[in-house]
Image 1: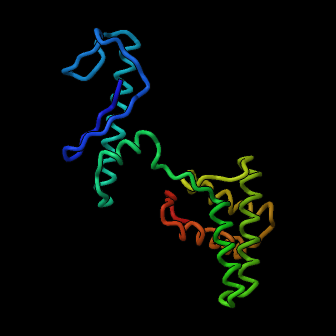
Image 2 (image 1 turned 90 degrees about the vertical axis):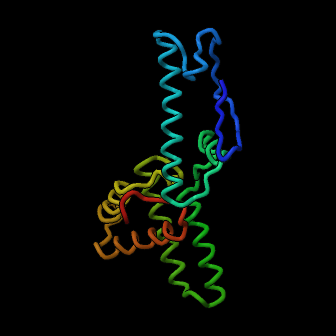
Image 3 (image 1 turned 30 degrees about the vertical axis):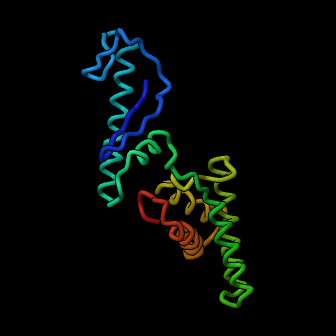
Length: 185
């Protein structure tokens, strides 16, 4: 089975990596024929892809993005999903700050504060999730809430210090506008 998407007369195709018997297929309906479980499963899969594409189209329209068949195929294949990691982005930010310390645009203490903030986030991710890093797209309000609790209980930070570390983390998130946290930090 192939998926074809046409936008403004431009068609793009990709394989769904599924096979189906042509004698059990309705060309007119674009669906599997029959009431067996395999037909129901395939039709559910088709509905699922159709719904995901429709929702993605709405998202593109709501954000005033250009709609192309290529974007839809990338979406279906999962190519448009950001895989950026929190600690990688934090390290990149810290490297930029360090370079600016050398240029006398930031004080060395500023770099130390971000270095420590990254260290706390890394230890929290390791303790809470047993991971070396965490994808930005997986961040949510619970992550921030649990991080604040970690800072206060495990790191024994005062409320103001914990909020400062969270603020430092928010700057990293804010510098990379392609990431979205469902509830604000």
